[in-house]
Image (tube, rainbow, N blue to C red; front, side):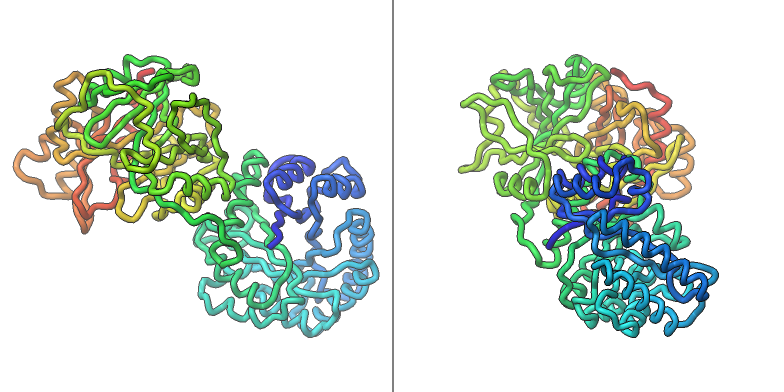
Length: 601
């Protein structure tokens, strides 16, 4: 189906929004009236700009408070409408959105509303314009899609139809049965379909709508179920996004438009309209790559954790450090930032690396060019929204390119049993405006499942975190976002969690090797003693080593942290088989402790 986006969904001047929409692959736009009023371009120039970009103008919006008002008010509305219709002729738009009235002058009279809308449609028809009537969820008398349709049906004019808006419909009810009536509306009378998701929140619906909408797949609404009913009705128009969101209004228009288009690609796949390459779910973490301007602090930390430098890349300044199945690449190339070590890339084990790359490219993930010699193993890589490079890997599997062949041994074997088994999870702190985009990206492009978002108290604000994982937990990525925009992206710490079967022993080995663990306040352990019962001496050991503890119905979780180097720190974790979480209740204590310690550059 054709795709469209309302200009209100993007930031910037109207020309910036149009360019971003076109570059993201949209077929058309809804021109929001405020964007036109603020533009220095005449309607004819906007029309020409859209034509040059290959965009149709699918909707002009909105007209408000038209129907079921006193006669003198309605006459003024008709004069206002005629002016707008003449403007739409110049703009090249043939459909106008009319919202159900919120005016205190409006009366609860469906017959009068139908009469007024018919008069409006007669006027519009003379200009070759159609009127799409939409029920606002907070409309004074008309606030449901079926009520709006009854009025349109009673008005009975070919230039009058209805506009269905997923937010206004689903914000009022989450019962799937409540949207089944959409399929009974004649498809030709559904003039337009506007889509927006939203997190499930208990708040005033107007405020919810104006500030918290998001793209399909980023919230809690069953957008796919609604779209199936619209398609069943025979709707032939575009899938159009109308998203009011404070974050999107401040973020760059280009990436936001790509995120928007990706959401529609995934939506069309979910309802069976398209069949892009199937998701190839990663089966493990092949490596985490650190980029650093100074090799010494990171090398010392890795050695203290029990890693050994086992190999070096043939043609690049990249070392492979290994322990068990945990691999860390240390890159000291020219791309290293001056502000310290950062987690720049992740290798994901894939049963079909080429298929994973095709899936990613079909969903608009930027494919990363690589400088490689003829001897280098071919590796497909894409960029995540935060810029992290994701490599699709096959480690030691016959018939597939093995990235480790690019590395030559340096004569230092991996430790036979240093206590670290594998990478348990990665925690990637996202730019503040890309949290929802990142969750949708990892779900749709990588095929990972997303857990519920959780809020974590930080001494300087409230953090959000959402984990994505595969079915068996061999790939776990915790996506986080800070409390507010930061002028310094270097403040966004990331970390690598390493799994061990004996955390106490691993922590002692680390300290004996000169490593420093994050100091946890004594008050935390006093509270822990009140929550749980421990074996004799167990809690004292945790206090000594800075080990944090969590427990749920399925098992226990023990973890501790190294101090931060640049933007990266390590976590040592021991999880019982049934424990699926990340110790979120301990995060406020950890964050407070990290604020006390200045990171090592």
